[in-house]
Length: 332
Image (cartoon, rainbow, N blue to C red):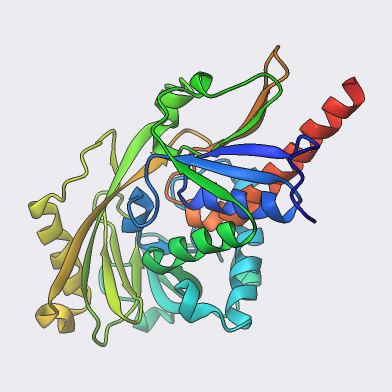
């Protein structure tokens, strides 16, 4: 379908992170004419620092997140099966996930391509349960520019500008998509939004176990081999906004990883990164209508699951956009 601005199909998206770009692509494919307004573009968004695995972390409610995540999983598998892994930064990562308490089979077990329980004798010391799973792994340094290119290839346009309030750019009869992430608290005047700061350490690639331990939110351990490097995580510090790496935290992250994979001791540190997850008690994905005929579709508050929920949320945004246009048509 060709974007049709003459028939009111123009849409403005706020934000060029994972949510804004995914929504922009799906809206363009649905025949809209999307324009992204953003202060920062990849590789300068905070999503760049993510140890991005297909996994729901700090995102509610599960009555919605599971369906969104499965839509995204389908898209990741499609890209991988088509051989697009290298150019997208997507790969399949087999990892061990450990738990301090016994766990039932995870909700996603029937939907992924490899899953088995770790035999009791092989569970790492200090843990009660462990799973061996294969999940999509996303390298943001490649995936976000790929999305940016796909958005432009579909006719999407981008303008870099800083927006302080959504009201400053809203016009009568206009549809906005609010994908402003952690900055939505200010832009949408939503006090429920807070920063969930995450720090990661990138080291040179070498043989390593892929490992996930989120049994203690204050001592998260991520070890993900991304081919060209290994990313170590992490942290989840609520209400902390600074973007400068904390040297002491980087040391702690590396020490936790070395306790699991001592073979990484000699790996050279390539980068220390900080990102700000958009925390909220639950994701806000809904339409807000105004008396002047304009509307905003809010899509923010994804916590640590922005990549995991991206395509599912984008498809719901498209459905809400179609519904808004239909409502306007009927009102004429």
